Amino acid sequence: MKPQRSSSAWPLAWVWIALIVYASLHPFSGWRWMGMLDGPALLALAKLPLVRGFSRFDIVTNLLAYIPLGGLLALGALRDGRRPWRAMLLATLSGSLLSYAMEVTQHLLPMRYPSLIDWVSNTLGTLAGALMAGIGYRIGLLRWWQHQRDHWFVPHGTTGIVLLLSWPVALLFPPPLPLGLGQGLGRLAEALAGVLADTAFDGWVPLPDVAAQLAPGGALCVVALGALAPCFVGYAMVRSPFHRLVLLAGGLLLGVGATTLSTALNFGPEHAMAWISAPVLPGLGLAALLGLALAWLPHRFIAALGLMALTILVALINQAGSTPYTTLSLQGWEQGRFIRFHGLAQWVGWLWPFAALLFLLARSTERRNSPR
Image (cartoon, rainbow, N blue to C red; front, side, top):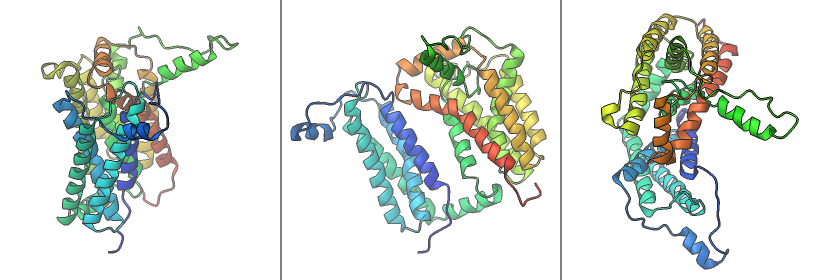
C-alpha cells in the first residue's frame, strides 16, 4: 500500500499527547519517591490500585479524553500507509502505554491518585477512537475529509487547524470577560515582580489592578474581538468568501456553546446562560457584522488586521480585573472536580492569542502565488 498524502493527524496527535501529559501531572509540584530503589518498591510503583469510590464523571471524562488521541494516532498511521488493523492496534497500544505511564507517574505526586479504573477507561477510549478512525477509513470518510480540506483551505494550514480546534478548549477556563483570552500577562508580571523583589529593580514591574474594571464599551470590544479571533485565523487560510461565512457562523456558535458549557459545569444547567451580561449580545452582534465585512478581503490583509485585533484584545483583557463570575468560576475549577483540567485549560487560554499572533505574522509575511 502506498503512503497517503501527509496530513495534520500527527501534529494534532502530538499536541493532544502534550495536553494529556499536562492534565495528568498538573500541578507538577511536591514530587516524592516511595521507598528505596529495590525490587518490592519498583513492583509497588508499577502496580495500579483499584481505587474505590470512583464516579461516573471520572469514567466518562477518562474515556472522552483519549478518544481523540486514538483517532489521531490511527489516522496518522493510516496516512503513512499502514493497514487498518495495524493502524488501530498501534494506536490502541500507544494510547494504553501513555495512560499507564501517566498513572504510574502519579504515584510520585501527592495530589494525584493512580487508578486501574482510569487506565482501563483511557485504554477503552483510545480503542474507541481508533475504531472510529478505522471505520471512517473503510467507508471513505478519510478521502472525503482530504477533498474537503483541499477545497476549503490553502495548503500548509495545519497550524491554523490546530489553533481552530484548540480555541474551544481555551474557552472552558473562565476568563475575566466572556471570550477574552490571553489574560496571562498579569500573572507573568506578578512572577517577574517576585523574582526582582529585594533587588535594585524591586518595584520596577507595573502590576495589574485586580479591582480594575473595563467600561462597558471596552467589555463590548473584548467580546467582539474575542469572537472574531478564530475568524482571523480561519479567514487567513480559507479559500472562498462563502466558506469564510460558514466559518464565522460556526465560530460564533462554538464560542457561545463552549462558554455556556463552562458556566453550566460550574453553576449547574439552570445557570448556563449567567455569563451573558449587558455588553455580550451587542459584542456578538458587532463580531457578526465585522466578520461579514471581512469575508471578501485578501488573505494577507486579513492576517495583518488580525495581528492588530489580537494585540488590542490582549491589551484590553489584561486591564480587566476579576468579576464575580470569574471568581466563582475559579472556585469551581480549583476546588471541585475540574482540578485536573485547571492548569491545562488555563494555559491554553493564556497562550492561544500569542500562538495565533505568530501564525498570522507568518501568513502576513509569506510570499503567495495566489492573487488573494
